[in-house]
Every structure is written in C-alpha cells, then in structure tokens.
Amino acid sequence: MSAVSPLRYQLKRPVFFVGFMGAGKTSVARRLARDCGVASVDMDTYLERREGKTVKEIFDEGGESLFRTIETNVLKEITTKPPMLISCGGGVVTREENRAILKEAGFVIFLKITVEEAAARIHNKESRPLFNNLESARQRNKERLPLYEEVADVVINTAGKSTPKIAFEIQRLLEKEGLLCPQQR
Ligand code: S3P
Image (cartoon, rainbow, N blue to C red; front, top):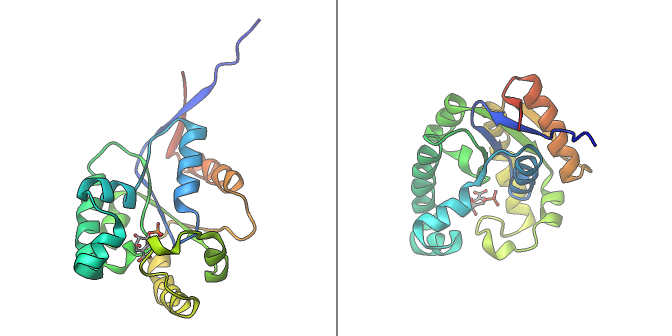
C-alpha cells in the first residue's frame, strides 16, 4: 500500500485578518491553520489571557482607550513571534500606529461583510461592547471601511460563502503569493 504523504505548510510572513466584528476572521484563520498545519492566534483571546480579564471587563474598567492601548501592545508582541495567522479585533485599524505595524509586519487580508450579515452571525453581542445596535454598527463600519482598505493587501467578500470555502480561497492566494509554502512531512 502506498501512503500519500500529506502536505504541511510553512508561513513565510505573518498574515493578519482584519474586518468588522462578525466578519469571520477567527473562524477563517482557525480553519486555514487546521487545513495547512500552521499556527494561528486570535488577538482578543491572547489579550484576555495576558490581562487575566475579558474584553468587556477591560472596557468596563478603562473604556475603549485602555483597551486600545493594550491592543497595540499585544499587536507589537505578536509580530515579534514566528509567522502566524493572526485574527485581529475589528477595531485594530482605528489607530494609525497599528495600521503602520500591520502594513510593515505582514500580509493583510480584509474580510468584508455587511453589518446586517455580521449581526446575524454574532450570537454573543454582550461580549462585544462596541456592537450595541445596528445603526451605530453601520456608522462605525462606514467610518472604518477606508481604514480596512488602507491596510489591505487583498479584500475578500465573504457574503454567502462558507468558512471552508473562504479558507480555501485564501490558501490558494497565499500559495500564489509565495507566503504559504508546501513542505513534505
Ligand atoms: C472590537 C472588536 C472585537 C474586540 C472589541 C472591539 C471593535 O473583536 O476587539 O470588542 O472595535 O470592532 P472582533 O472583531 O473579533 O469581534
């Protein structure tokens, strides 16, 4: 019996996933990591472990400005590690300093979604202090759109696509870019 040698991949640079809350950044990064055998990290989860507090607790304690300061420190920390797939919090692009880091440190994928679709996907709205209602989310998304576009190396429309489908589309793209390289196990 001849065994087919499964491929595993190596990531050449960090790959950042940006986009509005509910765009699927974490699910897509996780799925791609699993499919390709590369590491992934979710910035909010990393931040919560580092601080020993939830995002909501940080917002309650020091507001958005405290959260953004910690978020910038986390971004700096993560970019010193070996390349990973990094799902960023939706507001990472609001600071100019963060946008400069994203552009400089790796390849940025903007997962684009409408606020209506995002709302349908987000089950635990309590955990997202900045997704309070549809109207304010629409406004926030409108303000951020040019910032997502500014940092993006590529824009992927996620409307109507499943997580595995988006992950596969990105896998192909990263292989083509020479950022994801197959290796024999
Ligand atoms: C935020 C998005 C959240 C989290 C925080 C703030 C934002 O991350 O970082 O609640 O400003 O859009 P997700 O995009 O993963 O929900």
